[in-house]
Length: 400
Image (cartoon, rainbow, N blue to C red; front, top):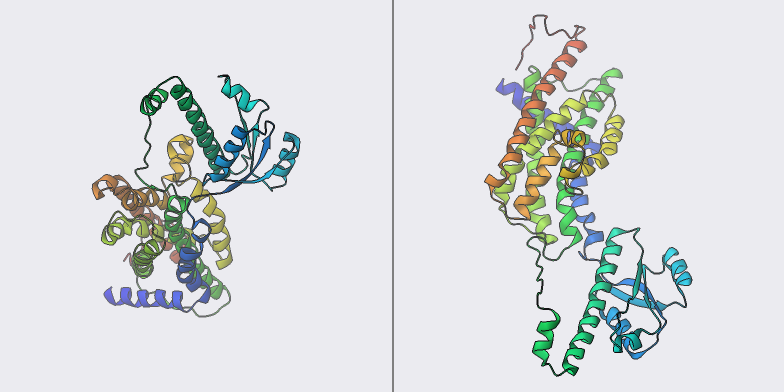
């Protein structure tokens, strides 16, 4: 059995490295995405959102507010509009993302102690732009309001310190424990990289199996696999695992350092955690590969399912808020558990004991897909030899 196993492993590795398409998917694609995918988010935080101002007061205080808005790192005043209708058209054309409306009598009403409202109109089509623009405007307006109120207290004879304390007796200090820069790349890229490992693995295994079926149907010779179904499954598993363990070292040892992503655990720890993730993905790929008759079908089906895997993985939207049946489906995907535990280890500095549930679940999925892969490979072997797929029939062939 050892000879059959080693022979099959070498045959699987030759199938990967001699097929340019498979090599691109299972090798070059991961390197490519690791460097290209984070590029659009390299700045981490969205800054300098363009906006227009409708200053109906044109007073010294209104001009000060505009200058403070422009000084904010989140916003950039790029133009002036005569009225709200023209500003709305310019926002609709994509020239601006927000509009600030300062009402007439703004300075006069403030000096007389009246409450004044300024209006903000922000494009909510892009949630990140909306959040940054609204946050920048709210902070700036509150800062101006606080300064006016403090000066009013000082005019009544209060000291500067007392005026500041009475103006805001209770202050909130907000600090992000994880992802301190609130960066978008730090939020999304680490989870996507784990998903890329899963999807490229599934596509590559499907392409290998589809290619062999195409060659058989064309009457061409293919490398013969030795041993029973279990030997074949284990051989492909070891071959793919050896390749993707290198990818794990590359991602967490090289990519994370280049893009300066938080790495709150050791490479050995994250490799140990992702070991059952890789095993479960490889075995799932061997189950799905039995249903792909050509290599093109595997590419289409796995790519089509990639968006579904992203949506139900739990890092783009909490699983707790999803319908129960979607949560049940997500539990069958290795990426759900791999992303959850992997992010907690690398981003939050969780201990291995704190991600033990995800680790056990991935071992459970590995066992489940091992059984399914054995059934699929055994049935396919029987069908190829002209035997009906009947488990009740005595099986003279080798199980291992």
